[in-house]
Amino acid sequence: MEFNGTVLIVDDEPHIRKYIGLILRKLGNPVVLEAANGEEAIAACAQHNPDLVLMDVNMPNMDGLQALERINAANPDILVVMLTSLATRHVVERCLELGAVNFVRKDTPKEAMAKVLSDTIADHFGEE
Image (cartoon, rainbow, N blue to C red; front, side):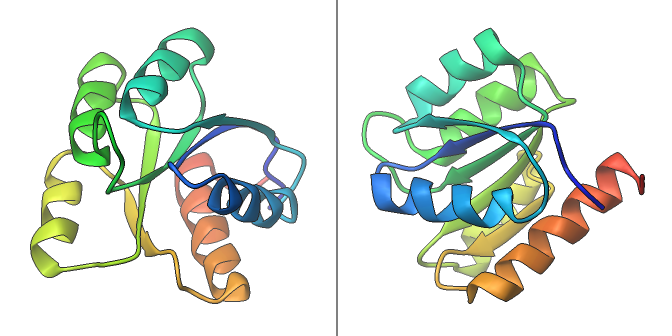
């Protein structure tokens, strides 16, 4: 499936945003937006209404869990996939409780990450 929707990548580390963006561009021709923290993510979602948000859990100002809760409350149709370096069971469960559709560790090899993202997109947007 080729994905051409709008994606918001939220991470406080610019190189991670760039890396995730490169993976997404292998899945199609998406419009890729970026935010550096939860506050910026909420504002970007309100302004651009992305199809998909890929968001880090641990960020300054407002973490990904707080932002996920607010994004999901404002627009439950936005798909959110959480990203993290440390995936404890509690954090994964909390993300899913708050409305995330999937959870990916940042250290997942790029081919495996592309597969997870591709499968998530196909599951929610259907095959073209």
